[in-house]
Figure 1 (cartoon, rainbow, N blue to C red):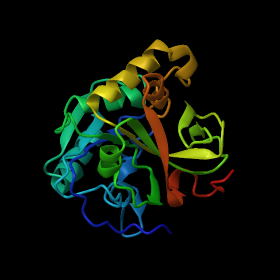
Figure 2 (cartoon, helix red, strand yellow; figure 1 turned 45 degrees about the horizontal axis):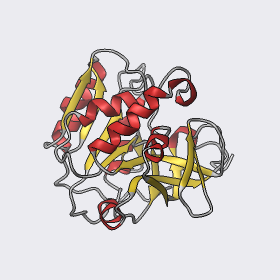
Figure 3 (cartoon, one colour; figure 1 turned 90 degrees about the vertical axis):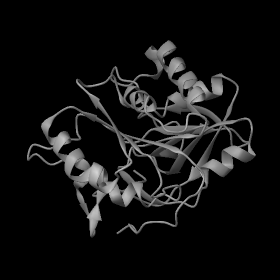
Length: 247
């Protein structure tokens, strides 16, 4: 079992957006995916609070559909455990996680700070200081946490010989660099440039008619920024825990 303990607190401000508006979030029994038991805690706590950039001073933005189970979860858990949290309610299904994340960007607390979009459904170890990495690399526009796999469940990033991203695809195995479901953009402006690129290239970058976050990194590169990957170690994905991650 993956270590689900929390990490020492990060200091630099980050915007953390957690999309929870997918069609698999609410369960038939009235529970939600984020409260799935993981060891002595829940899936949300085991992911979000274990990230090295997490801090109790964070102002996370949760994006949920306006439905009874999500309302109950927000009231009983999110606002109780994260009192500074901001919540975006969607009246209908969005056009994919990219759109849901964009809704969350409307409520970020630090417009000039990096934007981290965390799907919070894959556990891993990592020691990355995202804010510091962006601060020391002025042309860095995006980051993605990746691990080695060939499983078709994941999105993939193809790198050049210099370690910079060449291409990102949703659910298409173009390399062995599988996404761990965490993406960082330099700031809100770069996030929106990336979203606009996905909209302009919807036919190529959408998956099943929906826009996702990983392919947005193509837009970061298209606007002249670098995108790099950071290693996610000891990956544990509850969605496919009964199969080999490497595929």
